Image (cartoon, rainbow, N blue to C red):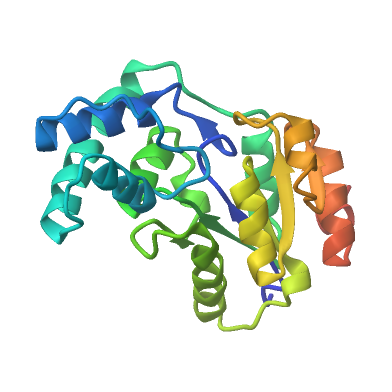
Length: 240
């Protein structure tokens, strides 16, 4: 069956929590690469891309944005991420497994990633939590340091992969920050905000997402919201 709906997921705060593994790995990777103490004070993390965070750290410490510096920093970050994840009590967020399994079983739905993670970092996280097989493609911090630009990249990749042209009325971006909402709006996709990160419901509501959830634990409500926008009954598609 031809894919007619596209659902793009953020990772941190949306699919999973690393219980601080990412932030610790950023700090330690930076310190190991450059011999500089870094507490991430003044550096926005949530909803930003790893390449954007690197640029902010380089500016903070007056380091040049050279390919060598990016590689030194990212190598240390990824090395530490592999150590930190198993040492912390991270977890998949409520409802994620049921939602992914349900969407993946629908022949007209395509799944992908729209994340500020480096592609290698995304793979480390998703493999650790055993959900990497749900996502055959994505757009990552390797592709662009601006999150809004990643939305168009993910959309174009999905079209190429599935040899179609998705109607933006059937494209959904799920994320836990105002940046995810803005990212969806940048291409005219549906923004689905989830208050499972650091931003509470009212904060997210102020940015006017198309759909807003406290979490994704109530599968029928999530499927109903997506189904109405897609224009077809997901419930009927899975025989409910």
